[in-house]
Structure formats: C-alpha cells, structure tokens
Length: 331
Length: 87
Image (cartoon, rainbow over all chains, first blue to last red; front, top):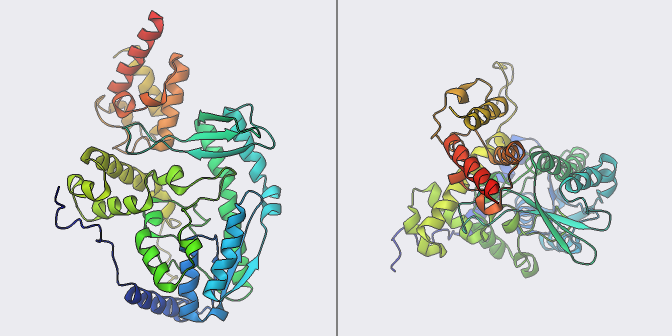
C-alpha cells in the first residue's frame, strides 16, 4: 500500500548539527544570562536522554561547568551506574556519586511500597522483586489498568490488578526515588551556584511520564521539544557511545527489570513517536497506520491513550496556582 | 430508575463530583471522555462494582462497553449477576 505523502518514516528526521547549535545557544543564554548561574547539574541515569543533555551542556558551557550526578540505589540495575560513568566520560564531565539508598530507607520508600504490594499479593515478602505493568494499548479496547508482578526468589511470578489504595500508595512510595534524586541535584547545584537540568524528551514531557517535583522539576529542559527518535539522532551526532544508545529505555524504578514500553507507553518509542507526531499534526489514523505497522483501529486506540494521558497528566504540568495576581513578581 | 442505577449514581456523585452534576448526567454519556473518571477512577469503579455486587470482573471485561457509561455499568452488572446466579 502506498504511503500518504505526509507520513514518510523519515518525517522525524532532523538536521542534527543545526539542532545542536540551537540548543547549545539556548542553554548558554538561559543559564548564564537568564538565570545568572555558573553551570549546571545533570542527573545521569545511563540512558540516552540524560547523556545527550550532559553532552549538550558541556558543549554550551564547557565541560568544567557541568556536574554529572550518579545516584544509584540498592534496586538500580548495575548497568545504570556503569553507563552513567560512561556518559560522564563521553561528555568530558566530572561524575559525582551519591548513593541514595540510605535516604530511601529513612523515608520508608521500600517499606511503604512493599506494604502496598502485600495488600494485593499477600505472599510478597523480603527477597522478592516486583514491577508494575500495563496491558498492551493496541491489543484491545481494555482500559489500561496497572497490575503488579511479584517474583519469588525461586522465579515463581504472581500478578494482581491494583486496587485504588494500593495503586496510589505504590506511586506515592516509589516517587521518593525521583524526588530524592532531584533533592540531591539541587543540593549540588546550590553549593556551586549552578542550575539543574531536566532531561525529558517530548514523548515523556507530553505524556506526563515524570514525577511532579521529582524528575519533572528543573530549571531548564533542553530536549523537551524533541521526539525520542530525534534524541537518538542527536546522540549519534554527538558521538554518544553505542552501549548507551543501544540500551532499551528503562524506568530503573522497580526491582524487576522493566522497560518504559511495558510500564507506560505500550509501544516501542519509534512507533509512539510517530503516533504522537500524527496526533499533533492532524494526520489520520488510517494514514499513519502503514508507517507504524498498525491497523487504523489500533492507531485509534493509541490516539485515545495519548489523549487520556494528556488529560490525566495536566495536573503534573501545572505551576503552583495563585488565587490572585502577585503584582510584585516580574518575569 | 433501577436500584442498581441509583446505587451507581450515588457512588459516582460521592466519589467523582464535587458539584453534583453527575446526578443529572445522561446514562449514555461517557464518563472518561468527559474527564469525570480518569485512570485511577476506573480502578475505583471496578472495585466498587466488584464489592457492591459481589462479582468478579476479568481483565478482558474492563472495556468501555462495560463501564464507560452509567447505562453500560447497569447492563454489565445485571448480566454478571445473572450469569453468577445461573451457576
């Protein structure tokens, strides 16, 4: 079937050199002139987004003005720390290590989360691992309701649909991880008079894939206007190491391995990008379908999911609301 | 109005409506498209239906045709209770 003229698979192709030039100029003017800060702190997860942000900031400000924070905790994949160090090395910046496990222990992050899981899977106990999952968005019209998957030390897996109270407690408890990391980033920024960089791509930013006042908090978000596919193009242009570029996007939040695809987006990022682009640009489901290998009906489901996530995450994007204008505060 | 519909409307008003507008909502109107029930709300609705009517809702039954409108919920609950009563 011939593709409609406006839905070429290359429609997200960018001039990487030009985009890098625009972003680095914006970082320099925003951070130095706009905020009067002397540098930036970037939390390095070992993923492509934070690696690209660190490399862009190093180009914009000079690598000596960029701190790469490595913030593992006891449930982090060992890969994350190793790849975070590689990210710092490739950007030519100094890594700083902060193990956040003691903070998470002190706040009760693990205990509170485990109690929530136990409320729906009573067998769950010490030594087990867990994650949350969503059903496929394209397979049926089923509502996308989270399930918890718990794995015993012998490999036996249990799965249970969340209850309202378990879901809210799970989200609240695991969000300690993102909020603790952001707290550490601001500590290291404040002590240097630096700004904090947020690393979401457009897919994450648009769809609310972040924790409010956690990874959603930042002074500047240099790649929030780029689709994930475009971030990969920038990564290739900047010479980000293959091991980082080839790693599947991960949440690194739960103790069982978990991709972003099974946790939130339910489609590989390249297909999600194209569906989001189509939704943003008025391209019909029937037209984008062949490009992403989905039927019209499946794309319609993805469109509905995109709209639902936008509605649900509107609150995440809201700045604190004033009940009357504070006239003394300027831009 | 049936007892089931009244109970569902009362649950929705008490949990999702601060201004009581659900009480006047047509039974055929989508709750998710109107933003009355979000993703967490769907879980709350499922839990309510399972608990209130002592029914088990399978994952493949969590679809708009069963729970996106008041009319659909009434029909679905009636069908589930009928099935369980016949077993």
